Length: 231
Picture 1 (tube, rainbow, N blue to C red):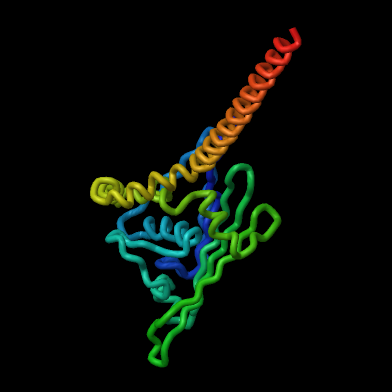
Picture 2: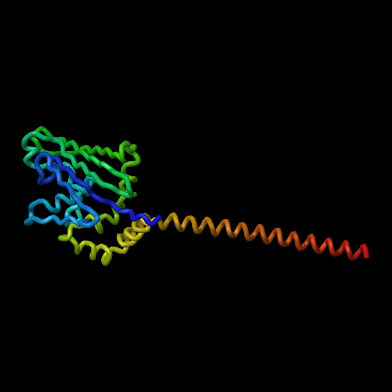
């Protein structure tokens, strides 16, 4: 098929997520003629947090610029927490390969008697077109749309571009992981598996042909010997 597969983010709706108080929805209206969305803002105005909301909706975690994972309970907006709110969520609408997806990830935050955050419990639901995706299939489905290991090349915060260079320069293991993830996205392992299967079938077929050929030669030899004896 010559159909181009791509992921198109249609909208992201945040509820008490990081600096976004209450429900805040951002729609990404694009077309074939205008496929690019630019997000502009002063420093510390929520640009990186917007990227973080997309990644959290898809992968259930937020990594800061030093590579450390945020404690999930701290993703709840401070003002909302002080007002007694104990949950936050991100709803992501996207399209991929002709299908529409809706991912909603929610976290409930627990606090101790002193009002300090101590833990969180996460829940995620996903819909593909008009059908809900089974819970055990949600993360594999998301990774099929965009594998987490290569998401940094597509959901990229340009302020941390140097992380990409460091990733492939200083960490051979990470670079190998990215290579493997890209191959998975492109279906390379499946192609290799088919190739190996074809080689196996080809070898078996060749052996069978050779066996039949040897048998035919032996049959011809016996037939010639019988003919000579009759003469």
